[in-house]
View: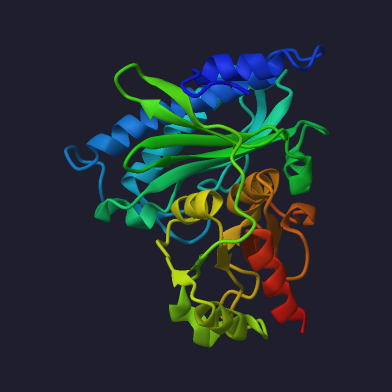
Length: 322
């Protein structure tokens, strides 16, 4: 196991050496993501001092108001990921269609990303983040994005909070790195993260309870309260899932009468987070099937999301299927 304090670049290269046939492409891709997110982190820290807070005066493909910092983060990621040459195609939550960069025509991978998750919380200084999901290029067209989550070769997120952390997996466990601003490097701080088998926190927006359309969900939440669980809901998926990953429990964003298919996007949010949770020993479901087995029908597909410790997710499924 790598030592605490190991530089991210060194960690990635040491992991690469375990695979004799590795070409270094994925290592370069991951380091490019880290570099882009360092730039985003610097803008997040300065957001209140320069004119990048507030709304940009437009809506994205999801019909949501675009924040200035959201737009800037998207531009930074597109620039870095397009230039590195490892990505044949890029799909952003902020864009209608994927981008096929000129420099990536020989790239082996495609990437889906949410440039700044939780952007509605930017103006009130709540933790926000970047989420990414990497698949292999197969056909060389938009169908490459319609692969199930279990086929991801890597997934992760960067959370911009009291410290900036990068958490990722390449299918061999989950590791977390904290950015040391004094040296400008991500250093290993949370090796081999394992989600507890059972937690004491549930994370769901109970203000929507009257609109929930899954039978048994209300009873499940009431049962958690009776068992002494604490409610913690930030409204920034990166922050809520990060807490769940470290402390256990369950995070939920169900479908409801207004959002029949759920609110969270499969490619940019649900699938990469599910990959991390399962790599850390947790469990995920849409309420009907494992999130990682859902085959996308389009790049902006939404799904209900339940993920966390095995005990709580198994208990949820008992209530939903009872």
